[in-house]
Length: 388
Image (cartoon, rainbow, N blue to C red; front, side):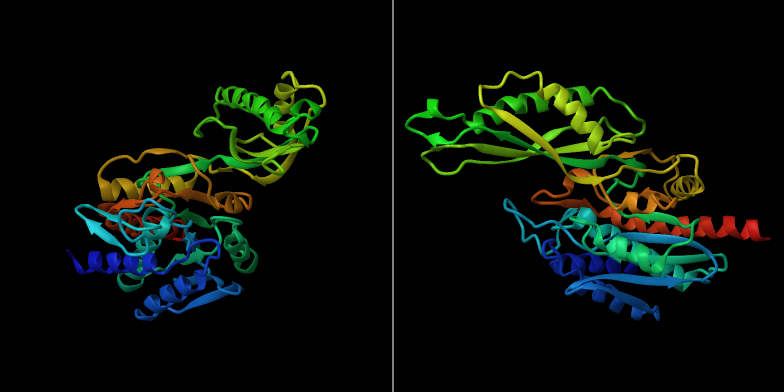
């Protein structure tokens, strides 16, 4: 193992050990760790305080007036949950894989970006590129860190942005948005010894959920390349008053993965059309209301950032990259809504995220660091040719 490889694994090991599960986050400890590692190489950085123990890490090298390249990713992880075979807060290496909370989502991406950033600082002269690190807090819930970064630092309109989400090193240029709805079934409360005197809202909700399933099947027929089809899924249910009471109300959360053109109003209108066809018991009704909206993120496949990423991939890997859509959500829409060319590109597999025994193929950590550095060199060369 080379010194660089050992260093990257140490970064990943240390980041996993820092328990930045969200909630509560505690990302400041990770931001301070990254700042300390950069300082060893003479790189200054800033801890952008957000609130309490929440913070971002910001650093930059190269000329301030150069074309901005932003390496960004989130410091927080989801709670580990149960079912682990190893300690989720300790990096465990077994053969070609390593295990720990966040190794794929997305502390390996952070470690690879750190390594590439330091390598560029040590080995390459940047005359036309301003390379930034923006490691942010609270991506897993509200995206607060990225929002605060964009508000304070205001990237240039032509900035090229890489988000180190787990894409198995493929270049991913879009992802679906999220709209969450609340479906509430209403009935009439009564004693459970005389259910005929009431109207059981839980039963009503059960009938309505068959309509949600039907709506999901309808949405699966929609195709907007390069995204997967949109979805509609019941993810949480609440209801009931007491063991011996016929419930007057029950509700569920419907998580919809969306494509361009979707809106809460459109989805509620379409879903109501399906639900209104369902026969409900006398005295039953329902209400539908929006909870959350995150728009899709889409970058033009023909833009310079995608082209340069493809060139970097061919230079390092010796083959053409796979370019497609990302199946989950990220902070991408916060960048794309500002017109910034943004791609998702990182080590790890999305199927490993948010699950027990989250793992990563270690080779991807090292390959991705090379890809990030090569992207910077490709961007630097192109900007140099433009300016000459």
